[in-house]
Structures are given as C-alpha cells and as structure tokens.
Image (tube, rainbow, N blue to C red; front, side, top):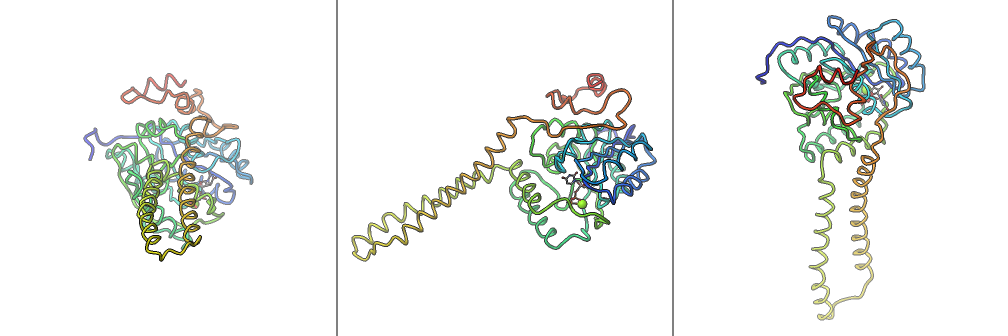
Length: 346
Ligand code: UDP
Ligand code: MG
C-alpha cells in the first residue's frame, strides 16, 4: 500500500451529510451518527439543501442542543452534489466522512473506514454488497449506469459505490481544488488519486421518507457524470457522421449504375429516408455538441455552486472551512503546509 507513516490518529473528524426534506429521519440520523463517532473529537455538518418541510427547524433545535452539530442552511435547493460540496467546504477536520442523511448508509461504518485511514488509506469508499428496498428499476438503471460510466470514463469507479466515503484532508483539498460546476463527487474522489481502499457494507432500505432522486434527476445526474469525465459522446458524433457519409458515398455510384442499367425507379422514398437519416444524425451531433457547449457556458459563468443563507455553530475562531479560499482560486497548493492555510483562512 502506501509508504507513508502508518497509524495516524484524527484530531478532528468531520461528518458531512446533505439533508433535503428529511423531517421523519433527521433526529434518528443525528442520534445514530453521533453515537457512531462518539469516541472521536468530531463535528457533524448538516447541510440543509433548501428543505421545504420542518427539517430546518429540527436542525436548528439539534444545533442548539449540541455544539458539535454545525448546520449550514443553503438559500434554496441546489441539489445533492452541490449540498455535499457545501458541507465539504465547511468542514475543518483532518478526516472527513460524507454520508447520506437518510440512514441508508450505516454511520457505524465510519469506524471501519477510519481504521483503513489509520493504516494509510487517503480515500476510503464504501461499496454496497446489497441494496435492499430499492426498486428493480433503480437497481437496473444504476447497474447500467455504472457499466456505461466504466466504459466511457477513464476513471475506475467501483460499481455500487455511492457518495458514502471518507477522505483524508489532503485528498479533500485536492477534491475542493476541482472547481467545476457539474460535480460527480464519487468520480472526482477517485480521480484525485492517493491511496484508495474500499470497505463493503449492506445498504439498508430507507426507513422513512422517499428518494429525492426522480427519474429526471437521475438521468441528469448520469449525463453530468459521463459528460464531465468523458469526451466520447462528442467523438461518437464524429464517428456516426463519418459512417453515414461513407454509406452515402458508396450509394452514389450504385444509384448512377442503376440509372444506366435502366432499372432505377425514381422514388422519393429513398430520398426521404436519406434526408431523414442525415437530418437525424446531424441533429444528434448538434445535440451532443450543445450538451458540451452548455457545460462550457456554465463553467464560464463561474457562479458559486451554492449560497449559504445562515450558519449554526460556526467554529468560534471564525474559521468555517475552506470554501471561500477555493472559490477565490486559492486552493491548497500541493506540498503547502497545512498551518499556513489555516492562517490564511482565519
Ligand atoms: N439530498 C439533497 N438535495 C437534493 C436531493 C437529495 O441534499 O436535492 C440529500 C437527501 O436528503 C439524502 C441524500 O441527499 O440525505 C441522498 O438522497 P436520496 O436518498 O434521495 O438519494 P438515493 O439514496 O435515493 O440515491
Ligand atoms: Mg437514499
């Protein structure tokens, strides 16, 4: 594995969870997550992703009782990956775990992940052995997505690994230095490299509430993932174009020959087909290009990924995480001593 000095101990463990309309579950989650990491100095960062139910009030109440629970209220719903990023940017621990707040990821597993981290792993991801209580449709589409992603992207993403993972500070800083807008965090944590290890677990069914991922969101998410890790769809448009052009070129002499042989029936059937075919291919190619141009436009605008409305239990020294640093393009340089960064943020 790694040749770095082994057996590290965390000074502060950050547990980051995005929360969106989880009023039925949030108390249970906080209780279970807090119990799971009680042996460590920890902060639990809950990012309220613009919940419209009683979640925000519940979060404030929890934060009032327990100073280790930090709450970041976003100004509206920015989506799972943006909320997760917000949490990661606010974390100040030297080890950070990200976990879903719906108790589908067992918080107790963080201890196993920490054990791996102690032995020198910088990125520990949880791989689900089983996915209970999810629809056959979700399982099938998820499996299809992972297969496709593996084929298209140059990132070796473990199938069935969600966003439940644990990162060392240096891996997290590397991750946060990636300022792209369409974020596929589970691919990005693999992309940063360092020493990666997996731990496996059984994914529980949601005990309450329902999935916040609609089919549309899931499709959008998969497209984002593939387009931000692969150029193949763009190249695919070229290939399809080339193939159809070749077919057309072959057909020209065939048509001419048929004409002179006298057996050519002037029919607009074939013409119509050709026009439809080529038109279709061109539209597909345009659409693919549009997908990337849209992405370029999004990146160029350089809008913040999320906007914070309010924060609860922000650390007293005013050091609320690395967010503004990264957004200002001042992300941690490789090899830069940690202390230095802490000073700059303060
Ligand atoms: N979530 C969020 N913003 C959203 C959608 C989801 O913060 O727009 C949170 C949600 O509260 C949960 C986690 O992201 O803690 C995963 O969402 P969900 O369980 O709905 O996804 P699934 O497990 O079905 O893939
Ligand atoms: Mg879930």
